[in-house]
Length: 233
Image (spheres, rainbow, N blue to C red):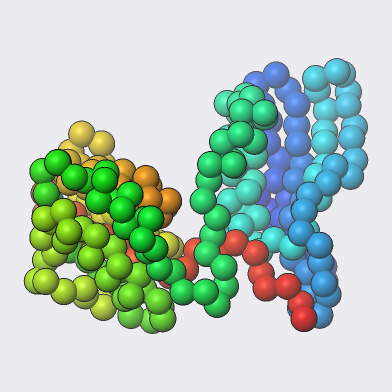
């Protein structure tokens, strides 16, 4: 369980125990606003009881508290599942980056073509599209996605993009495909839509809203995903 300490700068401590007994301690610090902090992680202490049991302390700087918690969860997953670090590094090269601050999210022509290619020849779906009303680029980004969907015969509910922030999905960042139930109960159109977005390098989470109809699919464009705090000027 991550614990937060305050002493000038916030410090997040995470302890993860894997099956064969190796314990890592990850410290994630967020800098004072006036300090320019290099982004990165480094091993700062090693205390091994045996060859495969002990404590390794890793300090990470330049991360927000929220991302620190996510990072701790990722480290825990790697340790508990005993994932191959080299394989994890290879897969990280395939992960899309968080959009740069100040640059509007858009669907370029190559991404649009990838969406069309992924959905071409498959049953067209019917989707509602909702864009966060307080996010500057959400409506245009949603419109770009909708344009590609319309080109392969998909129907947009009401022929419009709603500007709203439903309480059930407002906290979800980035793009998400929303259904009532996941797994086998999820509509086929939701799986097709998510696969097409991911193929176009538009990361789309699959999330649920129990108030939706069983066959409903909603495309949600929320707040911009955040990664690191802005560096000090």
